[in-house]
Length: 100
Length: 197
Image 1 (tube, rainbow over the protein chains, first blue to last red):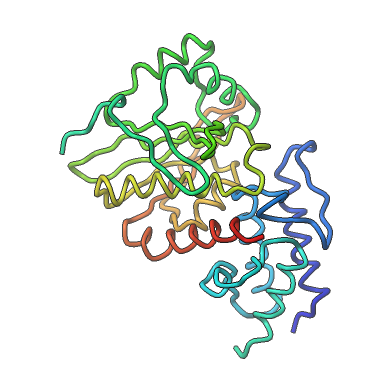
Image 2: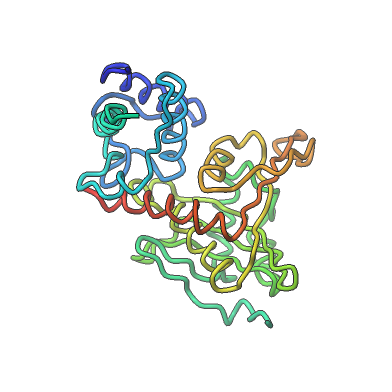
């Protein structure tokens, strides 16, 4: 199973993919504390979707399990999993820890 | 069902953004947005503010053209629903552009704007299908539209002349039932994420 560090690497790769699509001036610095969406966030919804799609695909490919990051479970959380890189990483790890 | 003229159309209200009908007085602002590099994937538009004003003034009743504005009134972009066909009950979302990206960081402006357009299309106008093309090289938009439930229905080779060269276009379509089962929940999830602190 993917551990926390491996999942975080996939999230950061998704941000790098996004950066490649952006003008140099619009690129974001990707790290564990990079804020993704919501107050003081780096991304607009167009960019967030790109990250979500890439993370879902990368995690599914690496783990052999399909993960959905925008289902009711994500919506019902008090703190959004899209707050920052760390929150998204922890959420994916949590999903992968569930019985298949 | 007759379509109201552009002047009769009302503001579509959301939680973070509203869509207000595009007016001739928006010519200078929208011309500036459309002249920016981020609009490179849209079809070539007016070359002057005057041409832009003329273009706005002559939009037919089959088009619903909007300025996306934050609920505090700050304009941030534009979006349209065009070629509305009430016989075959279909239309084409398009001219989708966030012109002021700085103003929408952390705000689900794009997703809520599109949600309001889809609500207009499927709930208010009773359309059963929306469809349209996206430049194949506009990978962020293609990815976004597919995530929101659009399905790729074809690839149109050399369909667009953009940036001085012919480019392929991806033809995408969304049915009303897909909007309700896939699109709306995903849009609501992203909007909910923006509420979270």
